[in-house]
Image (cartoon, rainbow, N blue to C red; front, side, top):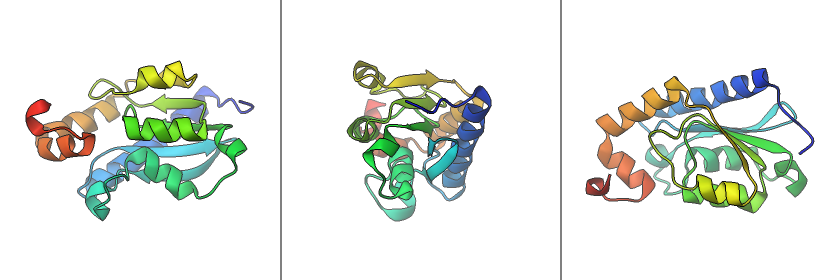
Length: 159
């Protein structure tokens, strides 16, 4: 990967993902946000839109990648995905398909599903345990457990 973001850039882009998560929560959705960045430029920003659009697949990461539009394979391979929550298996599959080499994860305390798979496939993970990300998800899980279980594909009694 040619572009290596500075710690300050990492913080700035994680903040942009958190803004997306907050926007989703404010809209009545699930507070997960993401941005896809290459060479210091946000290519796509998005948040979980399942509630807002009725989509079964618009998680934060897939929303950001969709909003980036069609890109050359080399662009994905020189990008970093910033996400407020550890990616699920669906979002992991998207990252692996496009060979995004690095993910900065806001937190994995409230949810972690596919980090081992990402690491096995060579994706660098930087987990921050950001208190803002944790607080958003803890509130979501506490206040809307049925919606959360639906989002991750489990029954509420399986949480």
